[in-house]
Length: 145
Image (cartoon, rainbow, N blue to C red; front, top):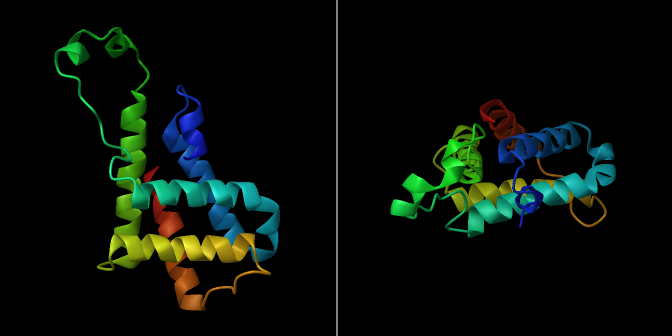
C-alpha cells in the first residue's frame, strides 16, 4: 500500500509528485539512490498498486448517500479523486514514455530501474535507452501531477 493512503486528508497527487521527483533525481544521480531507498521503495509500492490493483484510483459511488453526504460540502477535493488523478497521470506517463508497450511490462521496466538504483549491489544498472525511457516516464508523471 502506498504511503499516501496512510493519511486520509493528504493530497495523493502531491505525495506521488514528490516520490516521482525523488526517483527522477536518483536516476539522474545513481550514487544518491541508496540514500533515497525509502522514497524509491514507496514509489515502487505505488507502481505495484497501480499495476496489480484493478481498483486503484476507481471511485465508488454509493448512490443516494453520495448526494446527501456532508463531505460534499467541503472545499477539499475527495480523496478518491486525488488517487484517480494519480492513476490517470500514471496512465498518461506510461503512454508517453512507452507508447504501445503493454502497461504491465512498462511499469515492470520502471520498477526494475528503481530496484537497480536503490540496490546497486544486487541489480545491474539499466541500459542507457531503458534509463532514458524511465526518465521520460518520471518527467511526464511530474508534469501531470
